[in-house]
Image 1 (cartoon, rainbow, N blue to C red):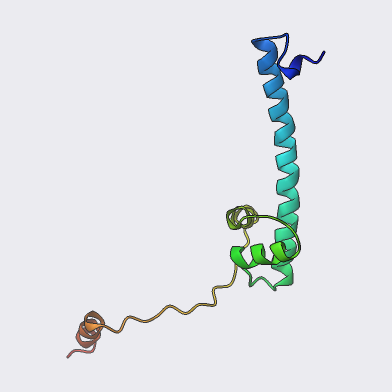
Image 2 (spheres, helix red, strand yellow; image 1 turned 90 degrees about the vertical axis):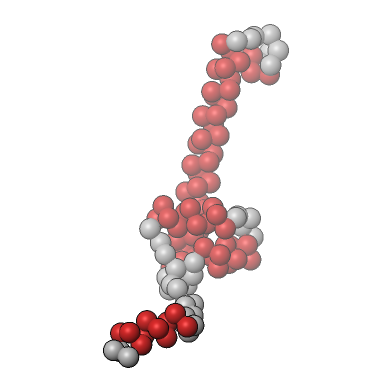
Length: 107
């Protein structure tokens, strides 16, 4: 009879089993995290350093890796990877900007 199956032992033995299971889970999570980091780094390198978390996630999903965008973003932060910002910010062309520009030009 295995004492981790919840029958027989109580208290300390049960806590010991929980601890052993958590240790195994930590090892599995570390392995999964390492594999994800490798995949993210490879996709980032293939893209020429331009892809961000959402595009890398999409590429990994096409390759059959089921992963969320937050996990990819966390992996990129751990590795210090950033995507290239290709979106232009719209300029503000309202009354406020005309006032500021007029004051700056001395009008």
